[in-house]
Length: 174
Image 1: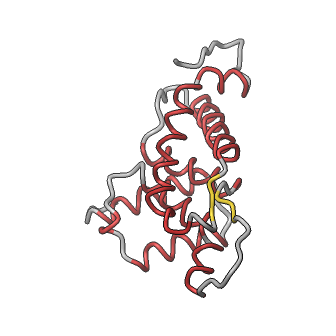
Image 2 (image 1 turned 180 degrees about the horizontal axis):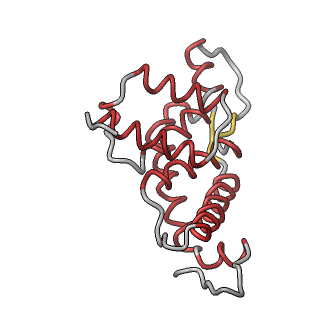
């Protein structure tokens, strides 16, 4: 359902969330599938907080509606904006949680567990693009995850990064 807009009324975040309720549910479902695809192997140490993920997606829709309000001719966000702004909010709110665990854990598993949110951000963003995971080099993935973890990010910057990743993966010029 489109957000009601006029020159006199600016939708509140609650209005946006209410109008996008079905879209939010579909987006959560798709991102839960991304989580299970990449992280089921570590389910004894990690879990995906549905409350935090819901906040990520609600924040995404609020951000996108504000962005569309600035660009009056924009009706839908393209796949790169969907990827970038989703990555922004997952990166900020970090829905992948570490459970308490006992016993020994390998150094490799520890590293994956401690960077799980950053990799989840990356793979969530890639799920919006025309990119197969086999098209991405290990260096490309490591560099993107490093940037997500240590560099300041914005939805716009991540949208551009998503576009460039898609071009590189498909052998296209930007």
